[in-house]
Length: 413
Image (cartoon, rainbow, N blue to C red; front, side):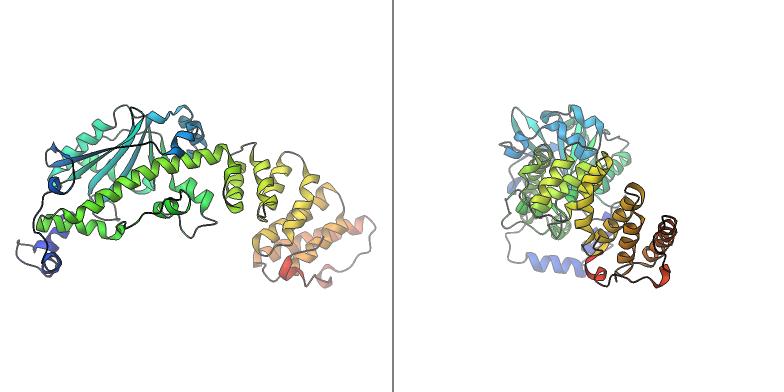
């Protein structure tokens, strides 16, 4: 639904009353009436219908303690390796909806960056859709000197939306190396937390739960109510919400960079495992000690990942007890570890009888997919032939006994 369509819902297509407007007026009945944004929030007129709110904050401790070079690994973007704290701009939008596209407007653009050793937030509020051109010109001006961008879910939403709005006004948003914190945050904390919204991370990871924060689902309607009735008081919590999001972005960026540099500081074993797995996939040589520490702290899921790291560096024998441990686990982890065990005995140890025993144990599991079973039966048939070639007693593979316990805990090599 376009901005015009939403306004028509409030005002009626011809400016007359509508059921939606009646709802808004009923909600506003008994309030103090009209109030401009300048009467509600301390700020300044920025021209063209835009209103600018500036605030200065102490730098979050997490941000100061982090090495910005670690953001290159988090972003998986080499251009971040040269970043400095003062080069970074943090961006967060409040919009008229989540659908995106040309019908969605960013009525509040929040930016933050380091100025004179402090975190300064600048929030550009649109008094009306007509103020967008002036606001975007100011966004462009405020980004001058910034070489890197940090958002939360900005790659999918904020930046594409802002790029679209810039194009509609014949402008071009600077293409900066972009770190979207949602993705590394999920890689580190998704195993432990139900969701990885910024508010949840702020409460659970940064230890700063918000009190009385507005529900994000209410935000678009408050701007439309303002357009209909001219009362900006309900928008004050929206601007505060956006400001807190910007500060949280800086703190979260710092915490992630700090953990990437010092993974042992992770508060939970599952977080430590997630860091180690992320490092392993990025080819970081510190993955092995990180996964080893996670395993020692009780994260059993670290065993197969640690085994893979050891195998890649040529320490297949050191990986063997880890595969054995993981093979007793239910689910995909146990199946995959059992297959790795069978491969080890077949290709490295040349112990075909042992490889065959492991394969038969896997076939006794109740949690195999049809593809798993077909692959294991093919492997078993091949191993029977190799075992027979070694002069070992040959038995029909199709009638070979299967490890019933494997259905619950995997093969016992």
